[in-house]
Image (tube, rainbow over all chains, first blue to last red; front, side, top):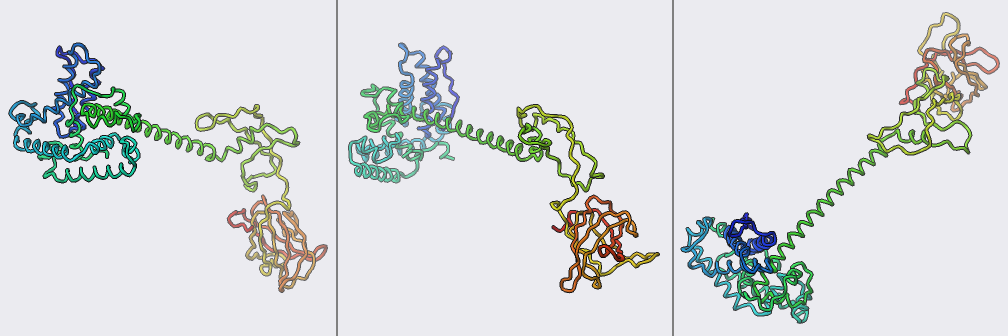
Length: 186
Length: 304
């Protein structure tokens, strides 16, 4: 997980309120953890932008944490959707390495989109629910059966089926996608 | 399936982007997501399955989850440090207690002196005396005075026990009683079948017998010509039988052709030096004289 010092100030240069600061810092920690393939300095820049926007927002944000998380997620999503034009548009100085190799970055983004398309087509509604439950530490077949309203054996088989599908999809990738970009390039 | 592998990171990102719900339609409140992240939400709560269709809620849940995991890790670290600190304190305290209670040989004496006198028992108060052998004293009949033991200081010792006031007067130790049958006797054998001092002056001394300055259970082997009967043994400084150091009487018996007698010679505390042993039939008869050298007792040579 990359760590970066966040300069959380509003547009007038004043420090953010503690409530807003905590919300932005929490959202940044989540993004840095769950998106290791995105430059942490880029995430920090987005988090600072979100913080400044929240500070100036009128009326004030009621749920800073929820807002910060959703806003940062939107920026990440836009980042990946606009991958085709990113190399020639903008970027922080830390992106110089990525900008020097636009073809490689584009290949990664395309590969990522292909993988997402595979997941979208291969995973059923039940598979998605089971994956989300597994992410919430509901790992026993009994818990999954209780949550989905199915039998114990059906839950066990569903979990096994999900594992096999994910394994098949991920093994079909030509090259690993995840991980830090600069680490893979070395 | 805790996704720490890079491949599952991509799958998680798929769920974080696949189902955008910017208007937050049908989303549970923040507290519900926080409860799910902290394992406080029932397994069959519908909010758990909602995250499969809402990327925003799943992202929010992930944020809460990471915060909670960080707090748990911090708690674990605090507990580990606390356990380590208590273990260290316990070990140090135990070592201190062991060293203090069992490492000092003087503790029993201190307790004995501090013990209040028992009115039901007559006689002098009980005092633990250092175990120095009386033979080492220059004059065993001289009374020994013990100075009271100074009180223990708090540094390196247990706090003083609140007992009745200690009698600090000098305590007089009774004079050691003469050796009795209960005293420790050292077994020794004195073979007189040779080395008898020739009678009549001048006496050319031969090799002496050696005895330790202890209370002896002495077996004396007499010359083969000795007849059975009761004999008196005298250890003297003078060859004429004067200045008797110790004496004993016993009956000689013959066993396997060897004439011997068993006596107790109380030589503890006697000065080392050269003496005469006079062996004579009781009541009458010329004594046979032997040279005896008494040496200081050496505990290592004792035979019990």
